[in-house]
Amino acid sequence: MTDLSRSALILVDIQNDFLPGGALAVPDGDSILEAANALAQHPFRAVIATQDWHPFQHCSFSTQGGLWPVHCVAGTHGADFPQTLLPEPVTHIIRKGVLQERDSYSGFLDNDRATSTGLDGLLKGLDIEHVVICGLALDYCVMATALDAVQCGYRTEVVPQACRGIASNPGDTLKKLKKQGVLLKSLNTF
Ligand code: VGL
Ligand code: ZN
Image 1 (cartoon, rainbow, N blue to C red):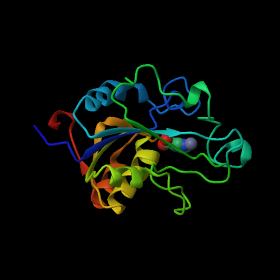
Image 2: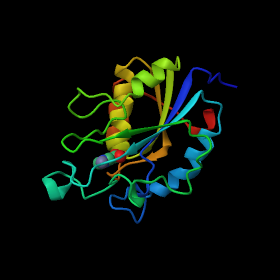
Image 3: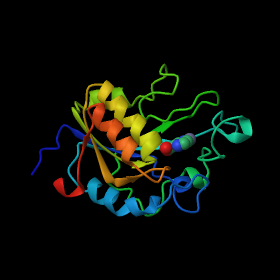
Image 4: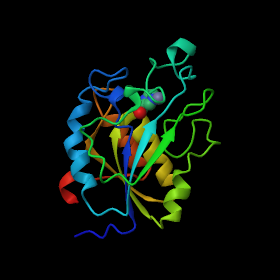
């Protein structure tokens, strides 16, 4: 069995608003839950869930001139993890996009590239050298998180079977990830 003692699983933005029926539903998003739950059963040193967590007048909202419908407002049902995501394996939660004037696709850094969420420090403190990433949305927050993980020096793997994107075709995103040094892994290799 693979040694996962210096590995972390990062579950990106698996939240009600990104699932069918949510404010910013990712098509077919609920189909990753079984795979995400299965991955989380492996003996990772840490299982980290990122949580999009916006103030109600966040700059990313179309009501404020941003790109997205109002979603993942702090403390609302839409920002919660779905009941179908098993909570027991999750060891840490990292909230992002918490400041009104900045957005954060990546679980590591805000889009201004200046403000850290604390994820890199958390992983370094746990002596993690390898991260496995899955979640929503593949072409936004999963991609940004994976590219930053490479930049931060982690051996970085994405599990496409446990990701769904907003765009219907994942090809361009997967190509970009590979080009930047992200390894694509199949579920059955864990
Ligand atoms: C996301 C758009 C806005 C994501 C979050 O999780 O991919 N996308 N906020
Ligand atoms: Zn958001």
